[in-house]
Amino acid sequence: MFEYGRSVGEGTGSVPGSQGGGVGGTGGGDWGATIVQIGVDTAHNISTLPPAQLLLLVVVVVVGLIIMRRAF
Image (cartoon, rainbow, N blue to C red; front, top):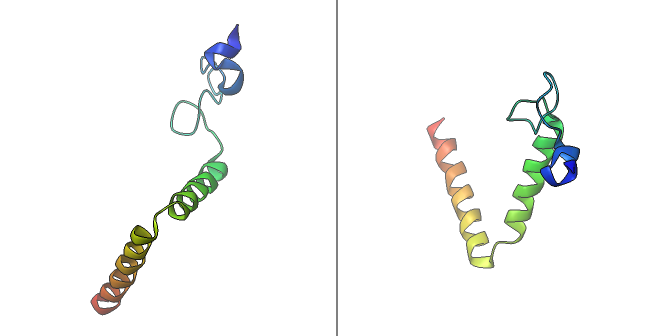
């Protein structure tokens, strides 16, 4: 049965030019969906941070912006 080998969802990758398992592998993939998924994953990770780590992240970003402004 092909479905247990993940062939139904991702293809086998044995046919030249097939999608074959994603953006970074043998196939072309959907770059737009990949970029959107990176944004969604990042937003989810930030939303699940504890308050202390979130505050530290904000402080680091603000200090980094101040340093970048003075450097350039």
